[in-house]
Image 1 (cartoon, rainbow, N blue to C red):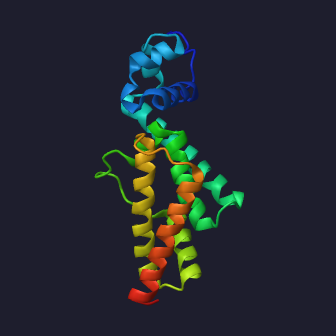
Image 2 (image 1 turned 90 degrees about the vertical axis):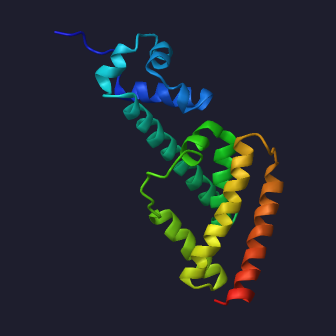
Image 3 (image 1 turned 30 degrees about the vertical axis):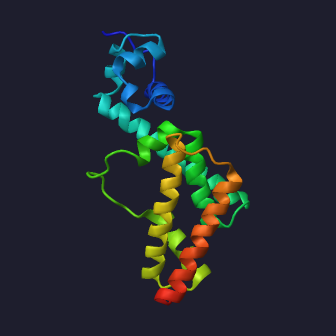
Length: 188
C-alpha cells in the first residue's frame, strides 16, 4: 500500500497561489511546489492529475479573491457603487499584481465569455444613474471598463504609481465625460 500523502489538495493549491503571488503563474512548477511544501514533487501528482489542474485551482482562488475585493469596495460606501467596482478592480491590480496579470492579462481567446450577474448589475446601475437605454449603458460600461483596465494594467506593471485620490479623480473625469457624451450625443 502506498504511503498516505502528507498534504491536502487545499494545501498544495494555497502553496501554488503563494508562488503565483510572488513570482507569477509561470513559476508554479511541480518542483517549486515541492520545495515550497518541503517535499518532492511526487505528492502533487497523487493529488492532481496535471500542473494545468493546479494552475486552474490558482485561477479559481485568484478569482475568488478578486470577487472579495469588489464586494468589499462596493459595500464600503466610500464611493458610489459603480465607481467602487472600478476602484476595487484597480486596488486588486495594485495589491495583487501577479494575480491581476493572471486573471486579466493573459490570452483569453479560448475562454467562454460570460457577462455574469456582476456586469448585469453594473449596467442596471448605469441605466438608473444616467437614464440611458440598456444598449447604450452596455457601451458606456465597455468604454469605461477599457479606461479602468488601462489604469489597472499600468499600475500592475509599475508604469503608474498613482495615489487613490488621483485614481478617484480620473475615474470621475472619465465617467462625467462619457455621461455627457452619451446623454447629449446619443440620447437615452
